[in-house]
Length: 299
Image 1 (cartoon, rainbow, N blue to C red):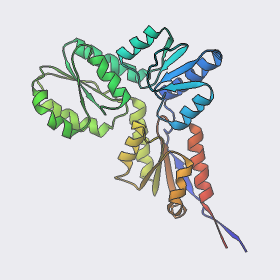
Image 2 (cartoon, one colour; image 1 turned 60 degrees about the horizontal axis):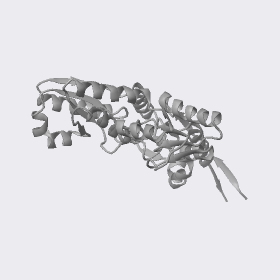
Image 3 (cartoon, rainbow, N blue to C red; image 1 turned 120 degrees about the vertical axis):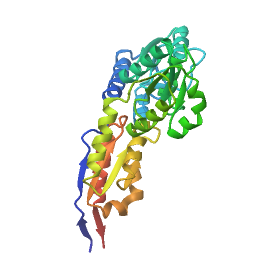
Image 4 (cartoon, rainbow, N blue to C red; image 1 turned 180 degrees about the horizontal axis):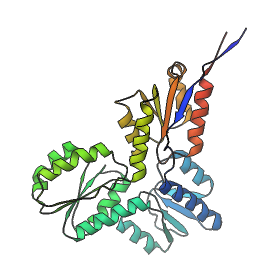
């Protein structure tokens, strides 16, 4: 005889989870562009956002992702949410294709501030991950006037102290998806060794509020699940801030929940949050799968 046991789950979704307005705008605009230009080749230089499911969906619509600029490029080329260097934009324009800039407005503001600081004679320090496309583009905008410096941690500040001491004027901007605590720790250390310091806290409001909402939810549950790409900076940062205070899993899709079946079965209160590049349908799939795992069948 088979007995179905229902382990009812208390599943809560964070107030802010899933697409931010910049990502939503970019995805919707990309789809609109292709719909209005069905016979025209449409490309994105680099992943529009850091999410494989979204990239696969865009590919299925005929919106192709480029890893580099080809010799010949006809049609429409979209600049992704993370932005691009001035040199990249110039190269695309020389190809003769139509360039559509879908850089997140918050990221664009950081680029403009970095450029303005450098133009005014400030040595620009970008707080963020040096190999992240957003940071690379921000740095390139400042580098048009003076070579900037990228710092990701207090340890990197300490390694570059001697160089920082030589800067007469320092201007600081920060990657939009950085951890607030990282920003708070680094700024005083830079300040100790600067003669003149101008700081712009350019973490976007959506990132700050998302982190805050996730922390608040974590205090009310027994397990947190962060949904989103391992490539996504804001998603991995959510995991980083939650792990010290609550048992936290970071998954990209519902399929990964199979590895944590026993843990989920034995946990009643589960909190869900998701990165800014995680589509709603992926979040819904994860929530539904948790509900299914909550039903255990035994002989």
